Image: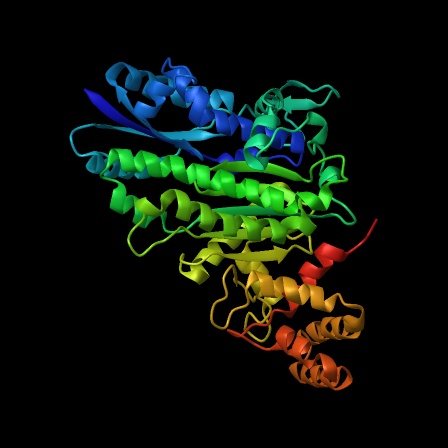
Length: 473
């Protein structure tokens, strides 16, 4: 009897971003990468280099998802041992697992497995890191301490595991497409920044996967090929994005990019703020091209390629990464919602205060004027859409307002944005005056201030210009 075994890892991002130490984030990423591959195979007594067995039995092993076709003994080992090994290897992560009997219909088995996994995910799992009331705790994470680090500070089990697993070179090679030296890796947030303190946390996620799985889910070989090729497309897209910005830091001692998650259709990266838009634009372009080349034969007839959406949280290097990632994820979801999960696009936000709130609260507090989200302009599409600005258009606006003969326009638009929050009448008079004084720049002024879907792109363009060009050190 054979079985279809499935496991879903939860709490990945919380586990990875529980610290602002890049060294620990790297170790956490490596642990998560190993969970779906080496750790699982080791649990059921298989070797990672046994490619014949893996190709025959592996359905998917990426981005926190594991699906394998196993015999009864292998399945028993997985069910009994894998969750505990995961939670011990990466304290703070939990896992859901389910098993269904494999009969003739692979598609039916997959559907049953997904339904079971969905049910199990909703059951609370007791974490192994609670500790007792009187225990000494790590000041960085608040978790129970199990010892002391090299500086004599209490350290918790999860942080220790991250430090011991810090083999970031493998993930960097996967993301950059080439070997690098340890001396080139950014280990501190200062290594990411240049000129100012802005960094970007980018989270990208593919669109339309549900439709594809519905069409090919009944065919085991097609499903396996789709999972493998999707993983390859995502990896190659990240490598293309790296190459697109590589020249910008050729003279830097360290690479200002730290891959965090790269697998399935997910990509998360921490990068120098000024490189964020160029990186994600190239990633989305490459994702469409690579999925067209590698997946076209497996997609529905009306789909030539897959698209993806991305959220970018621009934060100061001292801002908690955990909240920065949460915002990037929300922005990605907002982009998906606005685009109907059809076109590649981005949403971004520049965090300018210390309040930790949801994106919905940010829109209400910072971007809404007279009950309308006037300063929330996105999404910005990869390919131009009717009545929306493309990513390239946004980049062009940033270049325009940076020209020496447009400094007066830039200053005037900043004052106009401030006036919008105070008085609509005064703001209109100010805008008319800006156009009168800078009549030869009226096209640029209109591009920044004309409403589209009740919003204007001026605030986004000025925010992005500052991130790219501001010099504070």
